[in-house]
Image (cartoon, rainbow, N blue to C red; front, side, top):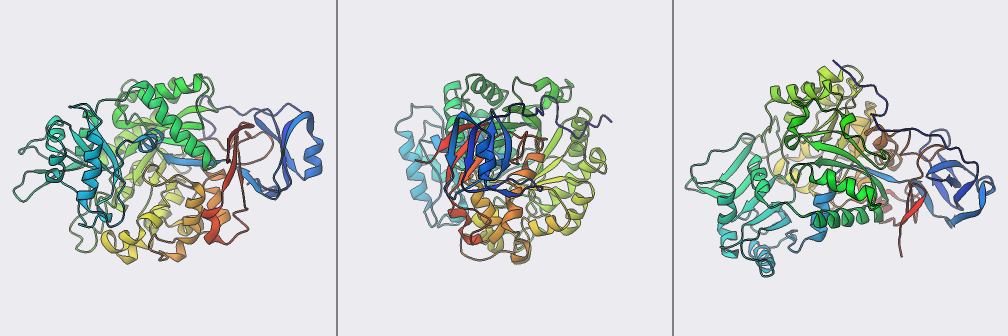
Length: 557
């Protein structure tokens, strides 16, 4: 087996700072470096795109060139720019750009939601697709998904699609159902389910691969729309202090559209954050037969844009009842979710990608899926996991599975915001109290020395990392309960999940995630020190400035 080295993949570079004078100095505050040698200092000096040095105010100001820009922190806090390890920038941009927003308000009725969709059809030519994002059946007053019967009155001309907040379910009207090729006699596709009414006919609710079949029918956006949505998402990331994002499904639009548009934005100087790309395996199936490696995707500036790995989806979502759980769903345990790939096919695919030197990131929410993922990883991962294979979300991971993750040094990117946004419903509707208290078991992972990161999965939840850190430290649900207090971690540890440890996930630990000489000058300036306030106040801290490569990228007015 061709196990790739544990260092940066092809295209990554580690360059020393050669300049001796700083052209940017931040001073007069607190600098959290995440460098164990000097964890907290007062100032940081930047030369070009990299950190020249960190230290006290006098020493750093002495490094300033005559024309250097000086930023007085005035008691504020600077730290490494946040790294979001699992997000979907284009689809987050779609949500920000949406003319029809299906985001569900607690207690809203299906009729009110449908009326908002109907409004969206009035400005769209006949026959055009209407796609609205973000509905959540568990927040609706009726406590159920809308159905074809609810959507058919909206339009007989437009195919109408309501995308569930999880991204794993959609509801369609009859026009869209026919466009996707589903009829009364249609069988469930492999890895998917077709919702049915009391007569066995499709009711318009489609799960997993059945929902993905509808997505393939939606006409692709034009280049201008993709660029606009990537820009909108990038601006929002910068406002949250995020300087690098991991796009966890390049190819979700079909083909190479997102990657091509990323490259165009990079060439035009319009790429707002650094991007680490993960190719969505179902849309990049040619990787294995064509023997494509990460080298085949190398670009001109790997610090800004780099394809790192391949993304596979093993199961669905807990709130959609499609995550694969070994104990079934609360309360009757008769449903256990789905596996989108049979375990043997998952193992074969991971092995083939590993042979080509690809890092593999596999979505696994349920412990049943996590078991299959670990089985697939243990061959190519060996003892030390040189390719840094990773599990995404890792919601209901068990203690024995944490032991396996630690033993093989598998990486875990936890969807920590589930605790806040769905914790109450996980406890009451999906998992029951005991399992719900253990979702995202960060303390258990930390006790085992597991390297983990935290993420928002935007657009599923909002991206601000400070909210994720707040969730990790407090485990407070939207209803005000504390869910699994024993799995909370200190703010300082949670910060690493968005900085130094997050950088490791994409082989960037020698360039990103810390403020120390030679690292890229990606810096977020906050109006308070998150390690010095009450943990319950962390999510209220504001981001004042975001710097990428020594250049001001965002400033709060």
